[in-house]
Image 1: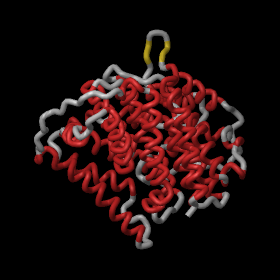
Image 2: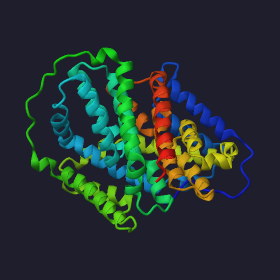
Image 3: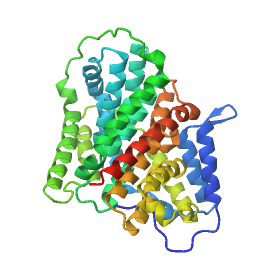
Image 4: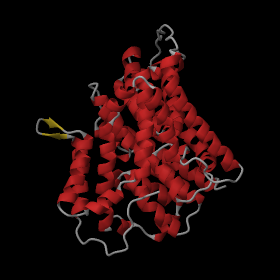
Length: 425
């Protein structure tokens, strides 16, 4: 799989890309210039254009920096996610699932564990797209704070995605670029139990921060939504492709074989039924979150330019890339500045070169992913949630997210640290 370009030439002597990155960070935090509200993808695109225009990265390097496999995977999964929305299948599933909730506690637990486990299958960025309108609808229907529901979704899909090689783009990079032969089995063995514990801890934090939303009250249930089998057929096929492909890979892994179905291919094959059989294919292609794909492309370009300066590499030593707690901490903190996907592309070769074992790779996966719970900038899925929420008049500010996310992330990092150190398998 392509990764951020590794140059053996002398690092650039200018830190202009780092300054541009800092400006991007500040603008994303405030997202306001005068009376103009800036979208997060616009800020990231501006940063990428700035490093190109100022000659901090060549056009060829910029093109090479874009991770094609990640973009293909995202595009395919976005089609599946949008197909679930357009067909009404998501509404039907959500009604069947969330109608079982009889109290605020159960509703939030359903979101945390339901969306959390689903993100391990459909990728957290996909769940961010299809989950945002869902949780905001639930907030309006059951009188929950929209901020509680958005935070619950963000925490659920970030935390839940830790335990799967297809849960998020950075795990995808680790699974493929490390030469891991049994990624589904390894991720589950090392990260499943601590992830479940972290989801439980998240519920405790949400209950503490939003006590008024958990006061007892009755939930009125809707009438049953009819199952439109013809309209749902394409997305059912897509989900079947994902489940069967994952099952095949797991079975092959258990028998000692290598990954049989490449992960980007899973997304492409899953998208085909929606495009070929879906009567709503035009709406799907029109409503795909193209701006998020632009965000990713721009992010790859800007981060490659930052990488070429050697600025962040200068802070990394041998102990950092071989110590589980240091990998966890470095991943969580640094991902706030260069984002978790390019950080993993940068840090993974260092761990491999230093002779890192599976525990170190799993620490990299956990730390870089849980970084998304620290601040909005820690994960692209957070950006997707906020961008989609703002379309409906709701949002989470940088400080609102950080006030909740910083202490939660600290506890979750300790959980992964203790688990990986005590049970290295």
